[in-house]
Image (cartoon, rainbow, N blue to C red):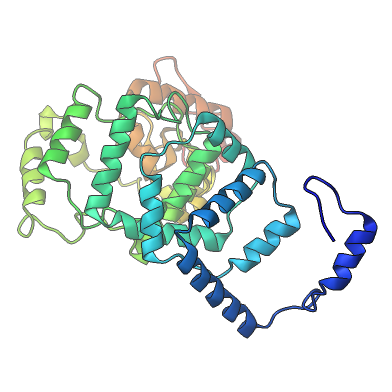
Length: 391
């Protein structure tokens, strides 16, 4: 039977060929032993014919003919299963690395890769493996230096640009970053070099040391932050730098105390009030009176946090004199405040006097004159409104 080039086989011819060339292995799965023998035979054959010009030419033709032909999903699956567990030798890896050196993908190719990987998410195991490989690589100083130099060069050449330039993190993204870094102490025990310190100083030169918070924290945020800090301290993940240190044992504490001595003491302090802190309270300002004021208010009169929540926040409850006069211990002149809020009212005193007097007037019906003096009402019914019987 003679076949001419370019002619297609007839159905009859195909049937004859099938009968003449029976393949008994079709439809059967090869044993592991047979697969291994086949693999060894193929390796041996390829080693013998690797430099054969006819074989190379044939492979080029096959490659050219298959250009643009994509594998089916079934074929891809089979190939994937066939390569499962297969690992390249170090020699093979080095050759691949050498062949790819200096190779830069085109924009079109990068776009294709990006589109192909859209919606594909790495499994947790794969992420963990990649993380471990990266961490191991990053320990090598030469590798880190090489990465920095390459990135610097590519930025200078304009081949890569910062993907985050001009962008800002969303609130959700900030929250996720905050949670991911919680409790991590990557810089624990490490110190900046003198060169690094110099660079930081130059970068911050002329800039303010802190950023004023435009939006104050809510009470819920404060409670959460307090609980988180308490948990981290109890677990030993964060430590207070000066805990257990004294002037005698640590130079930093000594230097700091020397700096403060005489700087804000006595009359030099902007809150100086003729040594009022040394003056004694009246006898009426006792435990019974303080308890009555606390029962009347039931919360901090400034932040409005209940006494139960203040215990969780580990804040103390103070009794504050509205006119800042320790001798005027009257219900109309005293309010309950947490220690945090109590420290805030030492500034702009005249404004706070007006604010607290208007608050007590609205809540308990107390009366005050225009010059912030207390107007006493000896009517028993009016006294009972405030919950304190003392006028």
